[in-house]
Each structure stands twice: as C-alpha cells, then as structure tokens.
Image 1 (cartoon, rainbow, N blue to C red):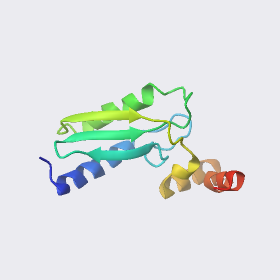
Image 2 (spheres, rainbow, N blue to C red; image 1 turned 90 degrees about the vertical axis):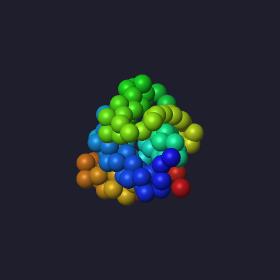
Image 3 (tube, one colour; image 1 turned 45 degrees about the vertical axis):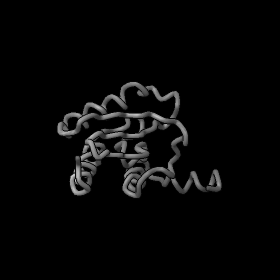
Image 4 (tube, rainbow, N blue to C red; image 1 turned 135 degrees about the vertical axis):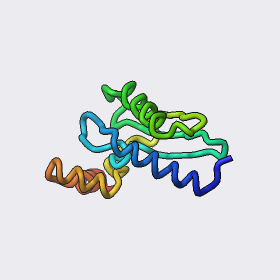
Amino acid sequence: MIDEKTKEEWKRKIIDTLEKIYDPEIPIDVYNLGLIYDINITDEGVVNITMTLTAIGCPVSNVLPYQVYEALQASLPEAKEINIDVVFDPPWTPLKMTEKGRKMFIEIFGYDIVEQWRRRTGE
C-alpha cells in the first residue's frame, strides 16, 4: 500500500519527468502544453496517465505516448505498473495549457495563443 505522502512524491516526480518530454511540433513539454489530462496513482502503486495529442492525426501519435511510458518507467522504477491511456475527448485546445506553458508559447512564438483562441471561439 502506498500512503498519501508517497503518492505526492511520486506525482512530483512524474510531473518533473513529463516536463522533459517535448511535443515535436510545438516545442513545449507535454505537461505544460496541457496534453496530460490526469495522473492517478493507486494505493497498490499503479500509475495511470490519461493524455491526449494536439490533433487526432498527429504524426507522433504512436511515438509520444511511448516516450511518456518509457520516461516514467525509468524515473519511477518503484511503480508496480504504468499505464498510458490516449484519449481525444475532450479534444485538446490551447485552453488546456498551464500558465507556464502559455508563457513558454508567448516566448517562443511572440503571441498569446490562448487569447487568440478565446477571441476566435468565444470560450
């Protein structure tokens, strides 16, 4: 059984790992880009990650989830099991980005994609 303190430590380690895996098209890590929808750690030590991609036809649809899996396996060998579930509902939008990811995007591309998205869609 894994206690809450250990789960929090694992979650921090998972996020640190995810922040080192970059989307090849938008050079922002998968966590801050908002591709990680859920991180669940069971009492038994199973890590379940729910993630998405920026588009259904994403050319790295097979590669990126595998990179996440391999990186987590290497950084968290004490996990009993690691499962990656790729979903497309709800679809990814720039609104899923963290504040850090939004700032990174502005730094890289020179404009605020979240603000443009909101103006365009009314969200």
